[in-house]
Image (cartoon, rainbow, N blue to C red; front, side, top):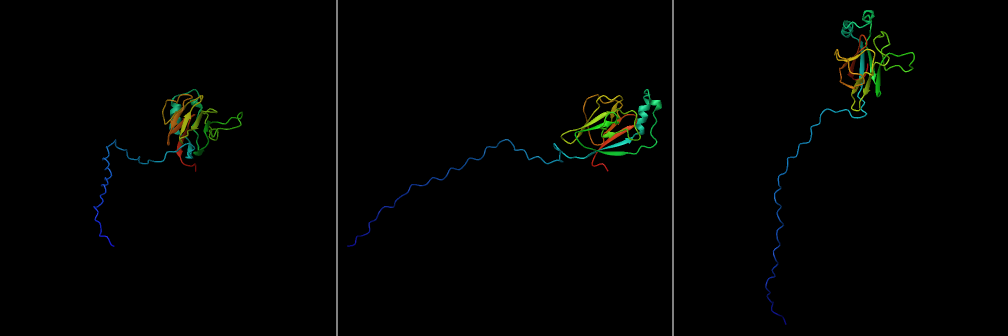
Length: 184
């Protein structure tokens, strides 16, 4: 026997709630734009090449003679003084005149012809800085060390920062100009 189909009420399922809608974000402080890269800055251990250009400087000589120091009448400007280019290397570069008593001559030896009689054995020292730059120290030279044509000598035992193109004046006529790049 067959049974008549039984009607059943439809099964209702509870409605599924929709997921919550997130609230709009609260504005915060503005976010700065990333920095624009600038020129590279030499870091510690940088191998930026520097050169000291050593020359006899007539203008500097004239200013020294004009001061009428005790030996000025006996010091003549050299008739021939070829320019020299010396690569700066190491942590310090000594400027001076080699001595027979000192077996290690300064890196910038101003005893080479024409010997500048106004330069001390250790007249000044260039010190390499970690950022690839140089500073200048006069450890107490008998005469003076000036920078960029100033008539005022730099103080003893004080580091003076230097830049490309700066001129160091020592002795009776020597000017040392710092340049970036290899000595050629």
